Amino acid sequence: GGVQARAMRILDVASELPPAIPKDRLCPEAQRGLQDFDFFRSYYLGRVPSPWQVEAAYKIVQYLESEEKEFLVLNVAPGAGKSTLFHDVAVWCIVRNRAIRVLYGSISQNLAKMYSRRIRDTLERPTALEPDPELVKKGLAVNAKGCLSIDYGRFKPASQTALWRADEFIVEQEITGNTDNKEPTVRAYGIDAEFIGHRADLCLFDDVASPENARESTARDKLLERWDSMAEARVDPGGLLAVIGQKLGPGDLYAHCLSKVSYDDD
Image 1 (cartoon, one colour):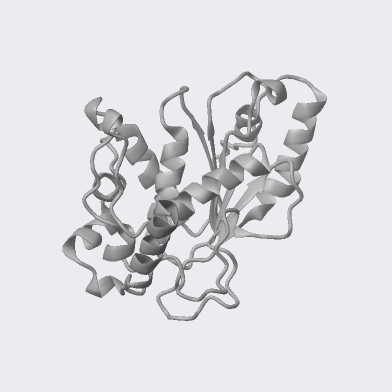
Image 2: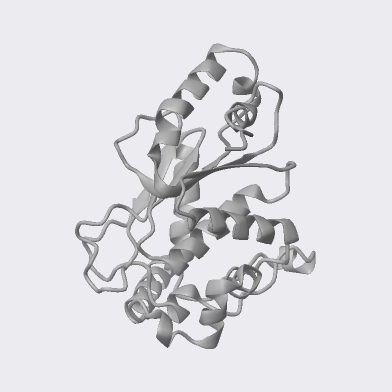
């Protein structure tokens, strides 16, 4: 019926999308979007300006592009848009560099998979994003003007055998067909699951700390042990691991991470 017809139409549109467009052939809006995060979010994702998120995004990219392995803790108040920030930063980094490897972590595999799917769906869209009219009316969103997969070229590979799952996927590379031996562009990871050896350039951990694992308990001890032995080990040299969330107490994950900071003057 109607759902099947709509799905077929989206499939037809997706097949007509251009392949990855070289940066020197991008339209002016797409060129600007590579450098201007605030414009990128408004034009392609329908976001309203948020100064702290823009500043945080530039910091993340700055640390990501340094030659050192970097670690970043972002503590924000509830409802500030932390998950939206990490989603938008991940999408922006992929648009800027299709060869990047992103690990998206959370407190559970299901939650991490939900975040990963959201990134995949944003990249896959064959049309401009249409936000909830109520959010637009309240000034919480704007109508996106551009479509990522049109202005930058498709992100979902044309090959039917390409890895394109909710929990891990590989975007189309600038060199056509160059995805066979590539590690996933994005992979979801729940801190409660077993690692399978994946390493990444950008590790984003959201909603890892909770009231249950923030106080002295077996749950906290297990979380901190897995964080030290597995989560921090996933970021490659020259990469960045960033964790974001509401500060929950003096013994939470964020305090644990910050306790490792050295202020030596050497």
